[in-house]
Length: 210
Ligand code: ADP
Ligand code: TYD
Image (spheres, protein in one colour):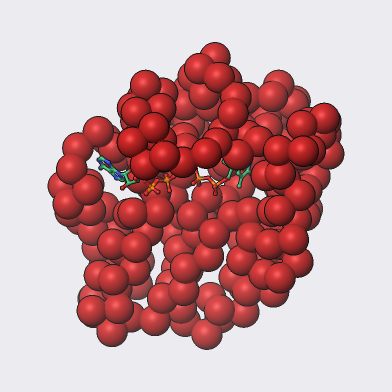
């Protein structure tokens, strides 16, 4: 089973990924966490290029191809083999990030984006995706609080992130069975409880008992 987490920056994805991983380990379920862009040596090298501030002049066409190149490697080197071994894979971001950040955020034709996904991930689509939703203002507040320096993409302003957030809501409308909107403005524990409830529901329906 393949689970992904999505959301704007600092929405609490990594926190929830860790909680779900710990929950699965406690249940003795084989689980592997990966992050995007990254997760393999090659993909991590591509990540460095993508997030480096000195690459401020990177054009959007280059950007989408690099994110997708990193993903193509991760899918074939790690995700598919581990799924075959029976692992639950949790990815901190996946192809929906490209759809909303590059497609909707940077105005790349969505038909082209879908074709790129076809090449990069083929039929390795997530079974379940948690979109942890917070406002742009909350994202800024959390980043200031934790003294996080923004990377190249995080330096983009409110208008960009509003487009990204709305893009996620569009996916939720198109694929409600897979793409679950989670209110990320609550406490981490409450969010985790809801995620576990949805995860268990899916797991029991398609994979049998936990
Ligand atoms: P992301 O992976 O989406 O960037 P993180 O999980 O790293 O987000 O969280 C970003 C910051 O917000 C961290 O400082 C984290 O402690 C804090 N945080 C995470 N979840 C919540 C929450 N539900 N409420 C308030 N702060 C949170
Ligand atoms: P990261 O530090 O992983 O951000 P976060 O902690 O929010 O997950 O940096 C990833 C950045 O790259 C983030 O701003 C989102 C962006 N991104 C894209 O623009 N397209 C993509 O396909 C992916 C995977 C990430």
